[in-house]
Length: 440
Image (cartoon, rainbow, N blue to C red; front, side, top):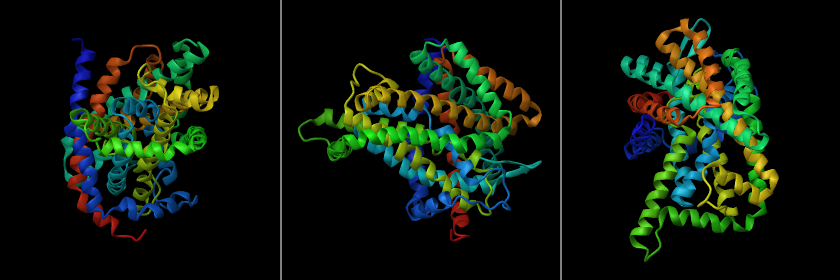
């Protein structure tokens, strides 16, 4: 067994049933503690998100909308295209329902992460720093847990937020243009470097424009296919519910196994897609210009809704309506074939563009997450070195095998959730008190 296979086994263990139960269970617990905030506050979340005018006098570096799009830039990635296809191929149509359930309870988790991130953020020379490492340390006094989270986040940023993404882009570009991966990586490193050199404000400014554009483009293409096959929608939705919840009589063990796999892959891919409970997004939310933490929390909880209930749902419904060959195809190829069946060559272009933009935006978002984790451990002295190393690895990731990197970062990504979930539960009653301090 080589080291890559070892980390693959460790990743499977880390992302196994215990962590999935902990993530979903925490979301359910917070849903009750906060009196179903994701339902009660849903309408007001949209009002805050769409009002378009923010209070310039409130403390913070970026607007709440920029904070949300920065967080979405990191969460909306290849998992929304490839991950959904993998979940359906492995768990059947029922996996889609469990992704929806995960997103619904994940909204309460994301709300709690954001309200605590703003409440315990730290102002350092005009820069706002926050996230799990700060509410673990300042809210609970758990310095070691905070340090562990920051370490896991720093390592994960170089993998899942960097090399894995640049590799995905290089593969897509090579397929359609035959461009050598090293050239794609070099261009991508330059493009990423020009943005991240400007820090959070420049990343947020790019995310503010890029995220809506890429979401509208991808979702719009998917909706065209869905409306084209609209007569199949009731049948598809019925199949999703039936295979997720109700094994057909007479199938016995096989039917039970189908339901089990639907639950397993639906929850796993849902959690991996929207990152609720992992603690990454509140690092961006902590820098928002708000007068009260609840304002950002209400906006932040729209992240899982947009990421999973909108983008992932479009991918899943297109696949189920067009019925691509999921036996002989894998991962993103399933989605590309589904869009091709629905829109011809234009459909493949939508998926290729989606994969490229989603992966690029993930690089930008995760750079900031990793930098804040790195700074928490080492201070600002190593900022330049971190930026330089990050950009170099964007280039290298485009043309090297990233299986080991993927598996290692997968482990780190899962381990981030352990201290974060403990912190969310430990501070849940405080989150409820903060929620009751204001009516909005």
